[in-house]
Image 1 (cartoon, rainbow, N blue to C red):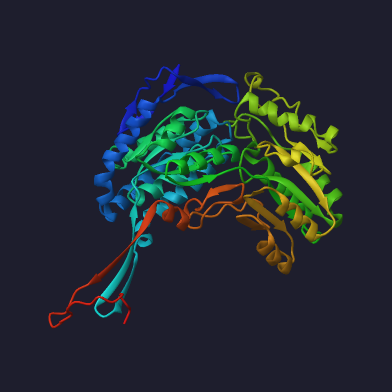
Image 2 (image 1 turned 90 degrees about the vertical axis):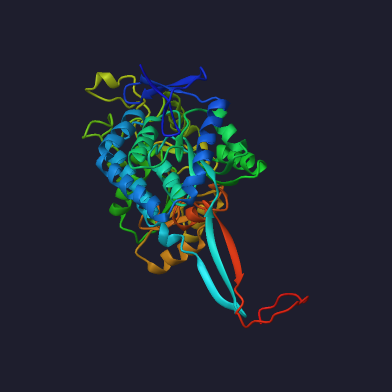
Length: 501
């Protein structure tokens, strides 16, 4: 059986800790590989390689860095099908969704290719007599990224391309559930000319994570995952004096006003709730139907939900694949089976779903889509981040009640409103407490040159990820004040406080 190991200092490194974990094909339930779990010593080796590489890489010209990144972008484009196939095999999402993931990750590579413009700095001349002041940004050193299972290619590419473009070196710890895509990303970067040690991939579990968080040579940590782990990452990283951006979970609401097109809203709710089997931190998990829209909207969503084609991700006819593990599938199903007892109406129950005509999928981690209506705000299905194909519908009499529902949630990742009323849309985008807002757009994930991140319990740290926030996170500012006296200057000694005169 295949063993998935580390990538350290420019090449593959066989794991030596004696610890490992299984990698499964979620569509069949069969184990496809074993992934090595790094020890503290192996983690230290990866950080040491990055630390050694930092000296030359951080002083390399912007022209050299961007040349590597341009070549990397071309290699990613040429291998996008191969990357997507690895994602489908280990995560389970359908191939078209995996291709979309690769494309969105490549947006950040393209942003990184323009890093010379982003790092230009500022200059003010003659702030005082013959005194100039310049502001510039410099890399931090070794930085680490800890990434989740749901986007094994995109989220790493949200991090390391910008980090290395800014002159840092990087240690990536991907999810142990679907680790192969990260190794291919590292191999392609090496082929593009990235020097050894600039990008390292460390497979593993909490042992590697905690060592990265406490290692004295790691200057900053980026994380995407659940809120409880984001809290842990922030607390431990800050305890050890590191800069941290930790993106947590979400409960994203989609508010549908009475004037919205119900068919359009239903179509968008289906894609946003059930795409990638709901395993997205920006998935719409709650629809808030305002006024008299509820019954008609629920009917249209239910009609569409029942027609979705669910099957293995490598089948071109599949629109939704399996969940990542058997344990996660069963946990997601428990929210549906327990919903009625907590006051919700189960409109569509996907817990007994089976893939017909594919006996090899009998033990796969499949779950049909579920739709819950009139969900109480006290129900577990509303209170918890389910991270699966379960959509809750709540009713609100007024716009104000709908916004109050959104804002009372402890999370604030994304929120959307569907309406034809420009005034209501403008009011919503100003009043809603979320970091990313969609107007007739259900999943408002920003393009690469804006930044991604939520509010409240969806973000721990001061910076959002990628875009200008990402560049600020991976660099630190320096201000240089210079005076070059004129040959005719006769300054002499002055004991007064410096002034700008």
